[in-house]
Length: 107
Image 1 (tube, rainbow, N blue to C red):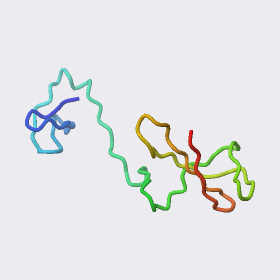
Image 2 (cartoon, rainbow, N blue to C red):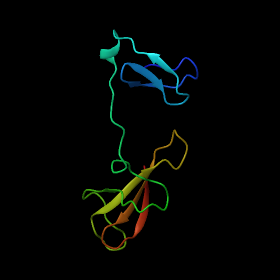
Image 3 (tube, rainbow, N blue to C red):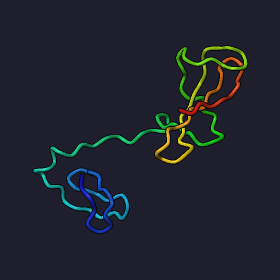
């Protein structure tokens, strides 16, 4: 990993030089270190998951370990969010696949 001398941001490989995405500064790439750099493709929009409140994202499916309190169905969608302080366990939010009842579980 190489950082920009001008602004301190992480630089990325572009051919034989390193380019800062923040300020555009460029530096020659040290050929001795070239084998240590790994370039990856950026994620496309299809690979990104939006988890903002109000998004139409179902979440992850559960296994048979949950039971809806309203209809007794054994499958639900769930999301995990950190609702308290960082040293507290996250909260799991469920939505029944059958009746759309919502509930939460604190660990």
